[in-house]
Length: 465
Image (cartoon, rainbow, N blue to C red):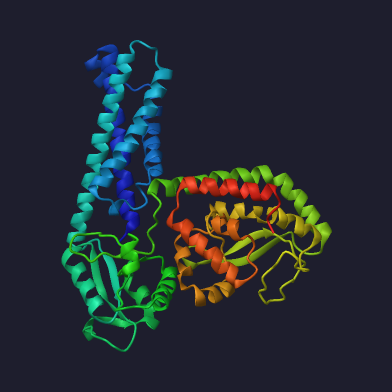
């Protein structure tokens, strides 16, 4: 399935709808203001009209983007699409209403309210109908298999066969490519087996897989999360058949009538519009912070160089979203080559820390260069702290669910670091992980704000170490 093509189609139709609406609305305003129907139709647009004719569609696109509609438009139900379109067109119409109110000569406020209703009606009906056309076309393409979600079932026996049968009967958008076996007890027809799990990389590359469903019979937690951990790096949809825990906690979701409820590992509980606003907030704050803090960065650089020999910044590989590595940027707080190639956790009384480095750590100033990581998209302002692969391998021995953190960007601060602080043992890392899992399950902009307030309090009290 080509997600980029589908997204481009939605954006194109939205822009075209908003362009048509603005032309019709300008004709309406001209008729109401001047009563010149014939002259309106053949009029030569003035400069303001031409400018607004481009600005209005772009403004609509921006609001639709902020609504989160473009994250996964092909997966939205018609009811969700209706509500999302209603909300975004209402915001656009009200904004335009106030712009016109400030720009026009006031003749009658009744006219403004009438104009607002006309604009809202035109924009909502045109945008929603255009989206219905697109989604209807996508469903037809799914039905004819021009578009499809290439799906593999990971499992050997009854559960795997049942999931495959459900998908083939009730989910036209999915095409079950085949099965990937996990052990020697196989109940799947041989011709449908793509290979075993050790061959998963080659299978995914050759078959262009979009989704993997883990359908084991009576899996234990360790085995389940081992498979999930191995799949994250492929940036695909990962689902599994729920156990009693997921059913009781409401994690299992019915995506289509007739299909067994599945738990999505890659789906976030955060509303789409909040996901967009969170990223927009990250970009704006990190950009402003890097500019405003640059004079202080110059001073810190001078002090670090005067304090000890070595570079100002310290780059270290961490594991981020989808289990992919990236280089985190920090001010150097230890003497050069403090680890000598062997990872070693730090503590408050660590003699490898430089004198000025202790001050930087106490107020968490050493973390500030990570605004660059946030701007690049490696991190978020609020999110679980990223770890090194060396320690992750130790953590998953006792807490195999660590891989759940891979579905969100790691952060500069989160509830885990606030509650635990610097983690100088694996046990503390696991304790911090548990807080981060709770944060992830209840992600919201409001919770992010609360965490930022607590972080600022910690910084000013010097509780960084």
